[in-house]
Length: 304
Image (tube, rainbow, N blue to C red; front, side, top):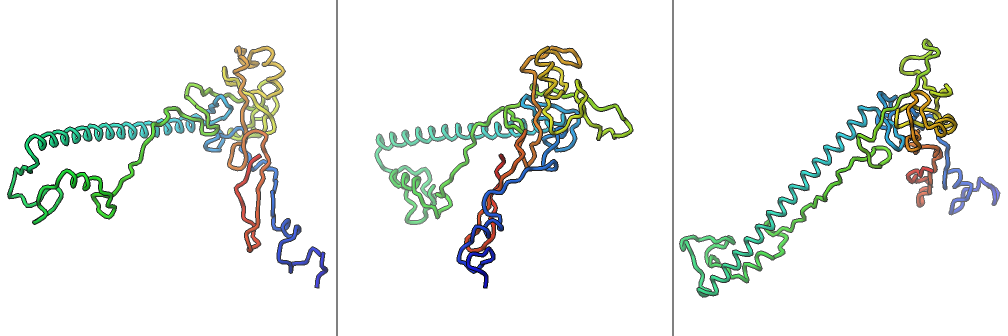
């Protein structure tokens, strides 16, 4: 028999603090490693090393083929929604015109009955079926009150009187958005990015595994460094060189092209399903115990 206050005491009707901690109850924090972060030289769409990289004004880098295909698919979706919206507007206009024609016809019918009496006029006396589908003794013409009752009757069990709820198509937005940052994105706002490869030892690396270096200080670029690209020319530098030289001289160190403060774009890193962009590298996960089961039910992770 274990002691009363022992941690091994498991004959209680509730969970102790130590038992909850062993089951993973509460907020669990974990720092994400290198394998959970998308590298800076990978496309944000295909997650592969980029080919002909293009960058938006928020610093998200894509392959040229991937981002063009994404924008094209968005344009096609917008055209499809616009066509559906135009068809709905045309149908609503036709229904409105039909309602006006029926209203005028009822007004003319009421005016004709008022001037010529309420005696029904039949064009075909041998016709044994009227427009409402009545036969035999019920084949007399329905009065205006009966017509209105049949038209507004909410008999859901009749196929002809089944209520309908037409789906309304809202007017779609004609702007395209960045697939990573969800901000507005146009093709003309994208600019090509030029990374400087390390050509010091060509036999050591393959053409695809060749590392990139800063164009100014020749330091190998990694995910731990903050990178800045110039939207005017596309060259990439580390944050230290940018703050030390280009922010002061207002000129690119490679091509000597003039640049302004708005041309400095900080490149985002990360951006996978495990973590967000930038330095948010810690994931928290809250677990609570199931009622009476003793099993931990997991709630979706919260990125911080």
